[in-house]
Image (tube, rainbow, N blue to C red; front, side, top):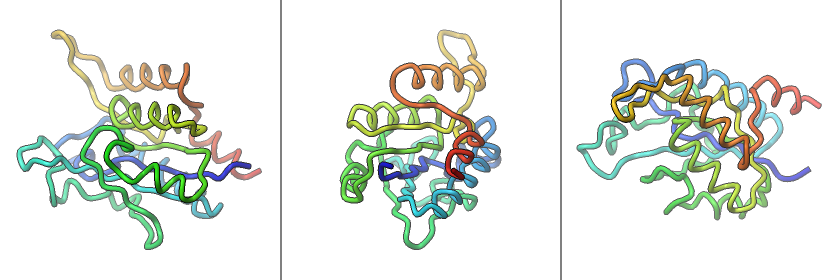
Length: 185
């Protein structure tokens, strides 16, 4: 079996009710991420938390040093787990993420987090392009309604469209339950 890692991307306070950029279904997605986190810890997989902060105090969310930019308590890192700080959408861009994965001999990643249409999409595509075997736990990811050309696209449709695109060519996309069943074998 290849060396596994769980990558938890941007499960941060601003995405939850009361935050600056609330996502649809953030709590349920985080609860599934917690289940995968517990399984990864039990298996001894590498766990990497990715935390986004924008460089500017005028950003709409994840402002530097703010409570909203902190990792949500549900998925709080253990003392021995790495936290990668990013300032871009792609978790690999201008960060030590790839070097960290390679240092640990990681070949396969499970990706969870937010937002499905931005940071999850970008990290998944980059990881596949780097040659990692990528799995996305679709129900451990969240997003929000989008607007384009005067039309609102509901969060559920945004999420489904992006998961379908990733499943087409970049990743295996499965439910948390399926992945936990596989981990138990």
